[in-house]
Image 1 (cartoon, rainbow, N blue to C red):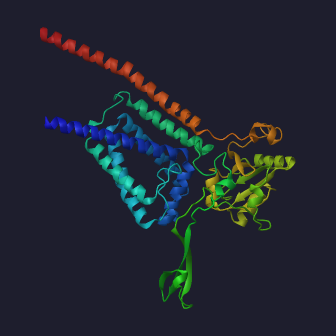
Image 2: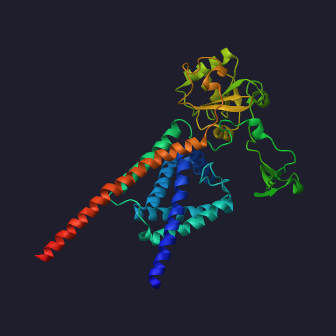
Length: 440
């Protein structure tokens, strides 16, 4: 009696842990798959923090981004349906055994601001991430220890269908979002955002308090000082940094600025206050930017000039890279400097194109789906491209769920109707044959 009760409790707990892990891994893998470049940037942050960038090939971060999304999403689906139980429970335990001490180190040393485990969809502090991983590690140990108590939703004979479709789905989502743009935009520059409003601070809001820390050296010894205890001139300046002593209200956008390279003028307000349309070509690193569609970009620039629209190229590149770009592409549009992280946050494409009107983001295009002459047939206020149609997250969620859920429900239905029915028939036939043998 006691053993049965214990087994029941273990079964309930194991399946509870199984569903928690499944939901977390599916969500984490999906948001990484939706924004592979965002995950790549976060992996690069880790490599820079640990000083590994010099010996890691450039293709590794994006490859690791896609593989990590595949691994997490696939393991989550395996647990959700109760398939490949031994493989999934072992791999999830290994993942948590690696990630838990890693996030403890991040919480203690803070080399990166957040782990990026849920991308831009849900940002956690390093300590929040660590305690989340502690619970997930306990859950992973539980499903590993009592994996045989995980309830299956698909038979062993049909589990390969779910496994294959899961891989095809997440790879397809990652490829689509890498080629075009993320189907979900969790960043502050999404379509429909008014940038000046997103930069504003409400009246009376608490301001952040900052403190400058100076790193000085004397007789081979380095120390940190503030303005209050700044030493005499016998110390040599090495570096400085600014820390947040008290965090106040921080607007969604707080680092957007545009400086015209030609004359060094800050034209941020000029661009954001323009009541008409403005095209912003975003190319954070021109040495790495794709120039395969440069003729189309030049055509869009000509179109903007003909119709009196602004057109600027925003970059964080060095002057020699900009000159090489001009020579290679024949670019005649003005170039402006903007922070590198800001540009990568604005759009996940290098280059990418943004359409603003009165400071509001109207459209975003990756380099692979730029508007052409068949789209730009008239002035923007007279064609569809120039109309504001904010992204509908609900509509996109429904489409994604349907694309993923309907095939899986179909597989489960086939499994119940065909595979399990055939198994029952075989069992009945075998039982009847055994009864006949006993009779003889």
